[in-house]
Image (cartoon, rainbow, N blue to C red):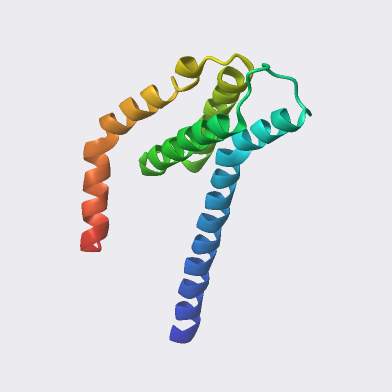
Length: 135
């Protein structure tokens, strides 16, 4: 009976690890979506401004997406809320960065994400301390 309980615990830990891996994969695909839009614009599949620079767009898209994903990873929200926020923020970014060419407006979603992160910082630190102590 003890062996079955240990096996059940290992299976549960393995399933949790697989779930975390799937979530990370989905998040990284969402981070790369604006970059894929940039490639589509560059090859002419999507019409945009005449002054489109793929290198600048790609750098901005990766900077925005990776920074937002890093802040989102630390936040204490449910996974679905994090993914929904990432989708909305990436849509905002694509619209203003690729189609309107207003870079200052494209990066606006980083401000509320940073403010939310700062508000949650004490709770995040407490949770990290508990995990460090093994509680």
